[in-house]
Image (cartoon, rainbow, N blue to C red; front, side, top):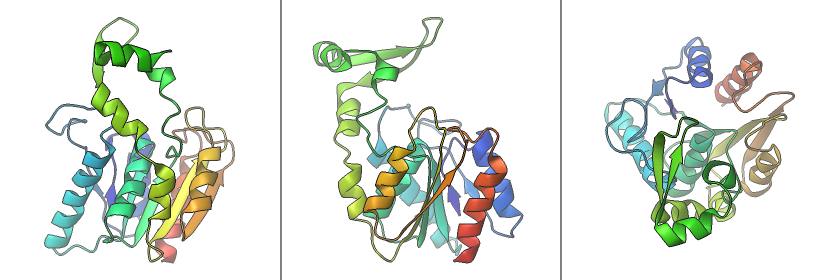
Length: 219
């Protein structure tokens, strides 16, 4: 099983531990430009990250592993949705708190009138509270996000793929309504809403792990 990064995040580590206890091997990794992987971080970059994931899955198959599922959290949830629409080589896909409406959630990161600013300057620097630049958003990377259509992507997923979405009802970053959109458009979809859970399942790690483990082992 391949788990989308950041591989060191608490929610991913706890979920991986729960899956391993069932006797299932887990491969956690960082995408290019993230965590301990080489490269430069890029905003958006969904298709490139789906290609990264395909490289991992292909390598595991080459090494004679049976890749039963891919799992992604938050942006990684969108990456595994995109992956399922592009590659038909993993029979189970798990989306944890992914965003359906990718045009939303941008203003909170880039500020108001972000389109006017990036059209004028060609880029936006995202800074922390101290004013240090965390990363740069280019016009190309922003447009890639805005042009990634999760509705069309969801509809193109094979009916042979078993798809599972988990989302917290109290998610403060991506509203639970997005999960219902995935459920509406993906052909073979199962939805689990964890009542009271936030985006990182801070107080609901067991409920998350139980749901994902239950889905995977039932198949």
